[in-house]
Image 1 (cartoon, rainbow, N blue to C red):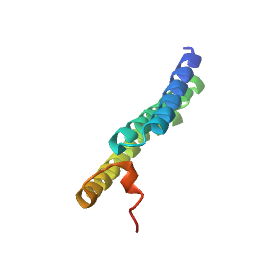
Image 2: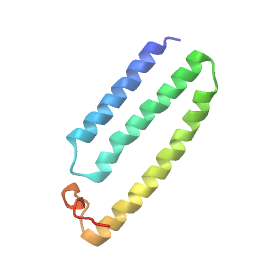
Image 3: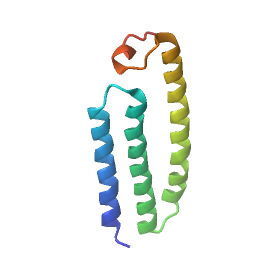
Length: 100
């Protein structure tokens, strides 16, 4: 197994995730998709390090990452729904006016 190509794949995913966040700052649901791709890159790094070092710790961490991603998505969706109910829009420009 050649881990270099897998590390390159996860590096490309991370760069695309950062680029996606920086380029799209208008729509909150679309801003959350690059975050998920960066979590996927971290997850693949955990798995590659685990297999290359013959250790199970990376695989156990990789099983916890989807749990954290699901919790993050649920909380983010709840915030978006409440913002839409109060403000009538989920545009990022109007989110800055939220206080409290």
